[in-house]
Amino acid sequence: MTRFALEANFDGLVGPTHNYAGLSFGNVASANNANRVSNPREAALQGLAKMKALADLGYAQGVLPPQERPSVALLRTLGFSGNDHAVIREAARTAPAVLGAACSAASMWTANAATVSPSADTADGRVHFTAANLCSKLHRAIEHDTTSRVLRAAFPDEAQFVHHNALPGWPSLGDEGAANHTRFCGAYGERGVEFFVYGRDDLASTAAPRRFPARQTLQASQAIARLHGLANDDVVFAQQHPDAIDAGVFHNDVIAVGNGNVLFCHAQAFVDQAAVLATLRDRLAARGTQLEVIEVSAADVSIDDTVGSYLFNSQLLARTAESGGAMRLVVPQECRERPAVWRYLESLVAGGGPIRELQVFDLRESMRNGGGPACLRLRVVLTEAERKATHAGLWIDDARYAVLTGWVMRHYRDRLSVSDLADPALLDECRTALDELTQLLDLGSLYPFQRDI
Image 1 (tube, rainbow, N blue to C red):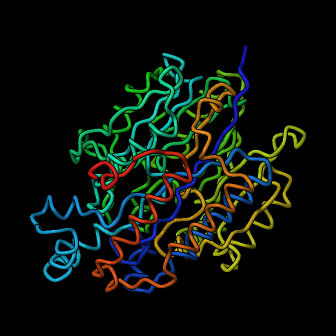
Image 2: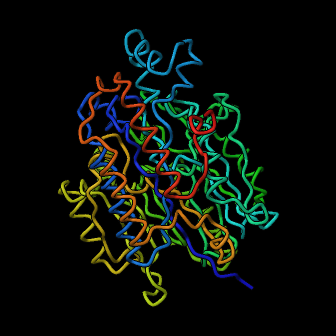
Image 3: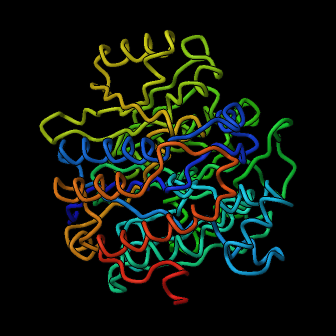
């Protein structure tokens, strides 16, 4: 008998050091907006507004806290010494790029935080989490220790949840988290098919991008499937198209999104795409579910428009049971501003297919660094018992939204340039804010500076 389950979304709260340092080679938006002045306050409020709107629509919506930045620990590891302010000053003077990495607020994109397998799929019947090592980028490779602590605090019950450490930070085990992972199913509580997309296979000669690096490896995806106790028939591996990576599709969620029995993707998303889709259809059919594929041609939406609008970095959300399986697509404002993309979306909604509604959000501050609606959230399928075992302080409702927006208004700057990262006062501001946040969310001593006191 299938247990009732729902899909919860846990969005990352944008941190106080949100800035445009242009750290992510291969991410076109990040590079194009390098050295612009950011607005951390507006970024955090935009993210919270999306969380609140989806919670108001009836979705299970949670929030995950940002990481401590600047990371003085990283700077000390790299040889900077003295008190914390001296460390920041010296890094700013002699290694500003390293300081930029230490100040990154990229943990806001929780699609990269971990890969999650629901209890219906795993051998031991528990929800499994593996924090992503993100070893392809220095500014992200420093996240996984805190990510693991956050996830353990959010999902603490060992009878319901299993937490795996990040894979070793070896290049052939490069893991970028749920941004390259999608789960297909009938009802959420049924056994599903987990779809892992990789950019390169380090043990075979396969087509490779020439301009930008492929970040996710097949070996990492296979390791996570083993750790999570997934049966071979429940897993499909596919290679991301190298031409898409070279166009700026650094994660699969920039060119494909799936939910339930629906896959919405570009025609140039995968290597040997017809075979990939046939395999997915067969696996779903074996479970009595028909996969519905919405495949967008280059004639309708070019790869350039795909990357520029983040059309597929949208949230595909199931509507009510009464909607007959129809879905809602949450898209960034940039989709409306690209004529070809908006024309396509309007025809899609009018066409009578599974996507029947659009929801548009202004996430400009995140988008300028290359992160849309889907980047900001980690999906976790939960039964009712698992939902009750989740840390209660993280669910978004009217009261939590009001508390968090007030907290942002008290602590965040409305202007932050790359040169401002050299200001030691920023560290003090961030620590004060995060210390208060852990109390507001009842998370205890989560950050290194709290535990070292």
